[in-house]
Image (cartoon, rainbow, N blue to C red; front, side):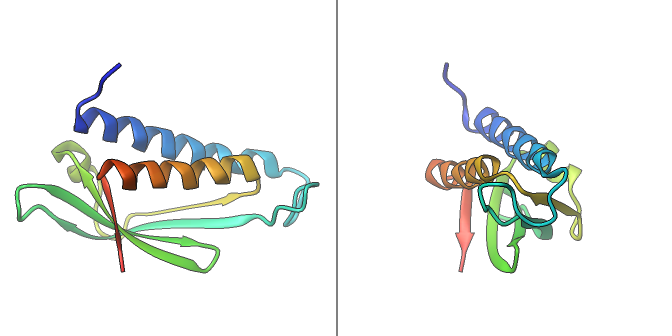
Length: 120
């Protein structure tokens, strides 16, 4: 199965959102840790800027992972670009180690595919 760049991005975005949304589901009954000792992580993503001046559509996003901040430039299509506004915010608590590792893996795969650039 082959995807063009836009289809791959859409697939990865959906996968990342599903992982983030599903990640908090295993936290019932635990304040800050699961039985295995994984500390829950508070994940916040915020759109801080948008740009389409060079023929590409980019959303600039900051990801705050329990105090560890990272900035990313995310290459998107025009429809996705229009769906988000500066200041849009998403917050979730992930208390499942497996889901958290999958989120990190998806971010790395997007970086490797060139659909995501990490900002310094």
